[in-house]
Image 1 (cartoon, rainbow, N blue to C red):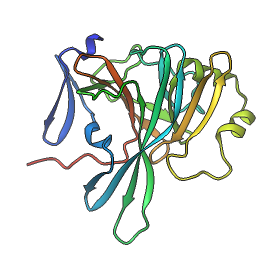
Image 2: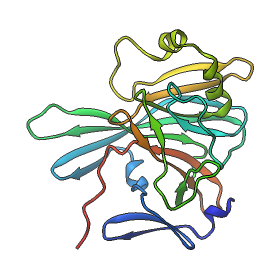
Image 3: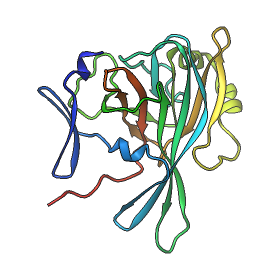
Image 4: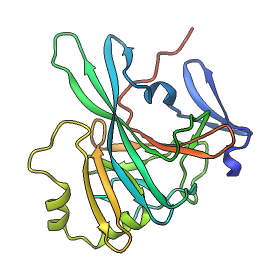
Length: 235
């Protein structure tokens, strides 16, 4: 278990959800228990969000080092400090159908989850890269409207692809509805692949979190695309 997970707990104060690590306060933590619920209905300011999960593929992880990034814009993005055993892991997109009175429903990718274990996560911590300090907002930038959770070997391989190859494989002529997954093997020797999905409202900066079971083992990496607003402050 990393030192970051020791003594970690979630608190709620004035409607703001925070991650508490002894001596440190993280400014942003979504309600991941709700966000990752199947057929969950959330209402915020008169807008209804209905969340469903979609299995978008299997991710081959040869090194155990996970990267969260927009791989079409930054194939040199650093891996997270927390690692997993090499293997193959399921990738799930959590998709929100958004309903507003008097308008057609909209569909957006609310979160992306790399499932390391089916055991429930009892606590969450920020997925940090080397050199990042807990306490500030953390996330990866999206410039091409997509995000991924993949092995560093697979992401680095994309650095050698020219634009024409990226365009042919990952940029469809007509973008389908969310989560719009596209899967390709990027490193032939290891079979490592990159699956991209549409990123919430598009370009932005999106945080990733690590879920841990009661014994501290990693259960998941989850990127929150910040589609669903936080609840209003209480009191």
